[in-house]
Image (cartoon, rainbow, N blue to C red; front, side):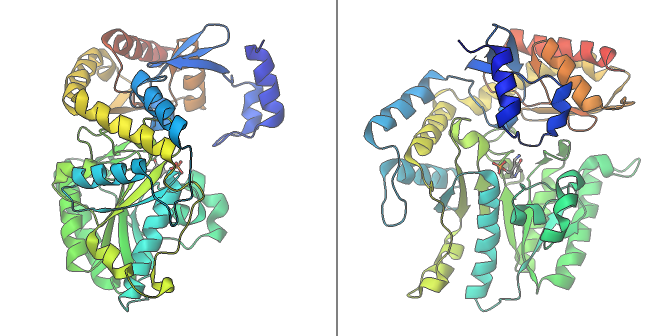
Amino acid sequence: MTSNSNLIARTLRSVWHPCTQMKLHEWLPMVAISHGHGAWLYDFGGRRFLDAISSWWVNLFGHANPRINAAITAQLERLEHVIMAGMTHEPAVALSERLAALTGGHLGHCFFASDGSSAVEIALKMSHHFWRNRGLPDKSRFACLTGAYHGETVGALSVSDVALFRDAYAPLLRPGITVMSPDWRHAEPGESPLDYAQRCASALERVLQQRHGEIAALIVEPLVQCANGMGMYEPEYLQLARALCDKYSVHLIADEIAVGCGRTGTFLACEQAGILPDLLCLSKGISGGYLPLSLVLSTDAIYEAFYDEQVTRGFLHSHSYSGNPLACAAALATLSIFEQDAVIESNKRRAARIDELARPLRAHPRVQNFRRTGMIWAFEVDPAPPLFARRFSAAALERELLLRPIGNTVYFMPPYVIDEEQSALLTDRTLELLDRIV
Ligand code: PMP
């Protein structure tokens, strides 16, 4: 029978973990997960952990969700996978149609891949190839925000600005043109988040004015720059950026891989600004956190620029698992849960309750910039001792919490099934941890 210690020993001999200095596991606990149920994960010894970060922001409706399980099982009986070039199937079509409908038909063409970084690569390539097909091949650069994170494949990393992920690979990259992030933590003292967002938009305009001849697209993570410590900003910035992109003939790419699927309080984060991008990337939560699935939605105008007799004017990109039927079935079940359970509405009540429970946390003397957008809570811990994030995570596990601070930023991104008792456990024990990790 598998035990925690046996599985961990075998893991450390054979598996190379993502985003991990493996040597740290000499002292940092590795957890062997046996199964999951709802917001809980369990190890082989029966210890439980509240998945307060939705397993890297993917799991929306809990582990072993009966409705998603049933949808995948039913699909498994019919068709597990089929090549997506030259063949089609119901789950991919139905999913494309439902997503297009969620954008009011504005983003009517869906291109499928498997992971978030690939969706970003696709959006970048599509944007450049669009301009090339339109006779503007010099539009081959991309603007991104300071502190941006869009994934870690070489193209996605080029438009990311998180030193930790980028520095070692810098010689491999053709860096994006960074423009000031509207993350209000960078506002001047006394400057409101809105004033700061407007100032950042003016800075964006100066760059686009000068360099629109070489810029194909501006890529942004709408409302929350997640991997950069949950930097939050005003929707007005997106409105201004949309208008500037139109003015200077630059595409707007919305990377909603982390912030989409209800995470910011609307199904798409862009909805809060009343805008739509030219290209929109989704992944993570779209399959309910079950199977690797990503996709890029594009406008008719972009699609039509590729529609031609010549193969080379078509979009040249392929993924073996593009449009995987099982992943699409999981996504369709996920969208059905949003509708059937009126999730966006019920999350408003859930979030308001967590706000109340988090009041003592907010008032803690070491808690700075306590903030929330939708179902994302974050705050900085100041002062934070050395190795804060790792020590905090390890101590959290001892208190049944799966939490992974980013630097000195603690955040919660719970699944949308977190209940009252679990919410109280999360806020109370986080408070305890603050007094413990000094
Ligand atoms: N974009 C954003 C905003 C992300 O948060 C992530 C993943 N954290 C990615 C892209 C990359 O997705 P993946 O890890 O699936 O490649």
